Image (cartoon, rainbow, N blue to C red; front, top):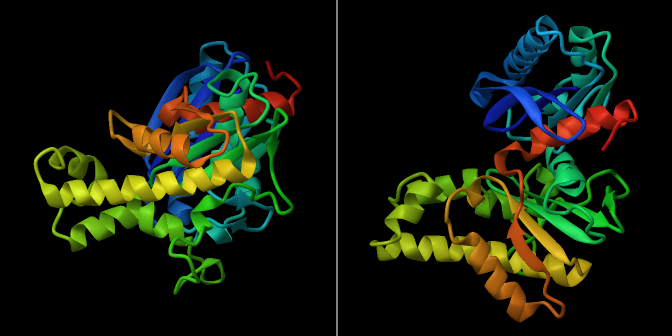
Length: 299
């Protein structure tokens, strides 16, 4: 199966197998500032190279699964603001033109990451759970009775649109802004860090927080806000497991411990809080799951 992941900061392509493993993985930076058309062209070129290498090696490619930002329709993409112009793309048409002989399935990156964790990872055999992506974007994949919950418009789990100060925000969904994500997500956090004279990187600020009180206060506020949102989500959904993925989970950042500590105190039936199995590769593996499902071959 050919898998393609188009994310806010990186592109990835690979060849997936029925057990969820991915071979011939190739990466490239998204370079969002170059605009949507450029990103899509480079992503398809990356996938084409992986596809051609697989065929040259005698591998069979039966379908293509694509993981991408937002919610993809024939003529547009909804809720995808990280790459300028992405919402106006006709992604299915472009992929089908590049790979006319491969059945295509496209899904939201966090939803398909949740599917990968459900199929092969930390949510396997879990009836009610949550995959929570914490990084540049903040969003959730919700598992209900062993199935991914999509919602009326396919957008269940968009917790980045949560209101964070107990009332309406200046900018909200109607303005194309996800308020919680804009404040606590990686891009918004970097903007705030620069404004406070701290390193414009959450990872660098975590390191500085070992010795700098200002950096420590910032990280404490960041993790506390995310922990509060997670606790509220757990009280509403009553999951047995919450699997944490995304850029904030790299290394020993402290966010897992902050979430675990607060949920144990605040949630009536605290879930198990753990790291997602697949980390940064979850969406790419989810694209494999999409392709397998397209041809009826999910493990």
